[in-house]
Length: 159
Image (cartoon, rainbow, N blue to C red):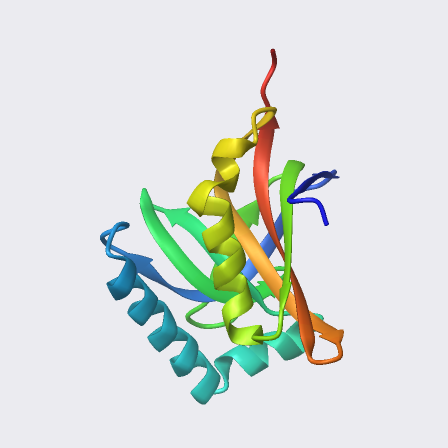
């Protein structure tokens, strides 16, 4: 399986999500704890299920920049008016798509994120990640395995 592909999105789209601002981008343990707490909160209070029911049922883990700060959340494709949720703009253009697979559904999005930001982006020389956000989904692939993809908006580097 290739490490990434480039796919083009022809129209801007929106995602609706619940999330947390991460004050210190380099506080990996603290950010993971904040993110896990938010996920537990919206799972337990039914907010995430409510959002999934409004959309197509596919959950996304979303990283975004809000007011110059890192933000991480969980949400769906589409724009929904739901109290406490943020509506995020994703722009048309080229996207770096990084696939992954594994047996642990709850860890797969983080594994793909780690692969991307742990070195893969530096290896891609013909495109540059431009944001302002990225999104990862994970779904069942059968036989106890899961498949996921991270989508990151990028610009072709003109040589």
